[in-house]
Amino acid sequence: MNDVLAAVLPPLGVLLLFVVVIRALVGADRRERAARERIRDEIAAEQASTRPGPAAPATGADGTGGTGPGGAGADDEAAPPRSDGA
Image 1 (cartoon, rainbow, N blue to C red):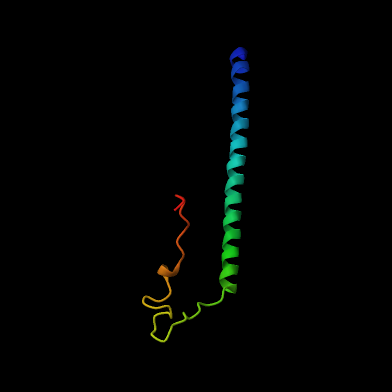
Image 2 (cartoon, rainbow, N blue to C red):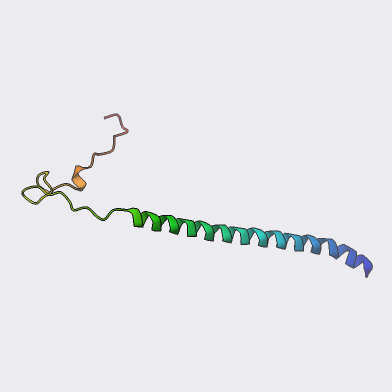
């Protein structure tokens, strides 16, 4: 009986140590994620409180944004450079 106990006790001790270490790692990760989320929320709230309100869009005499048909918007953005050398 002592031989069986002597053979089983070390692996059980290692298993217990493994479980304790893994639980500590998971708990630390959970706390870090919660802290990061809290900090992210605080930063977002601070930015929202310091961000100015939406500005009124500038319009031309014809009410289109002052840049011709369609006004200022999606068509006014520059196209990305081509990589094929053309």
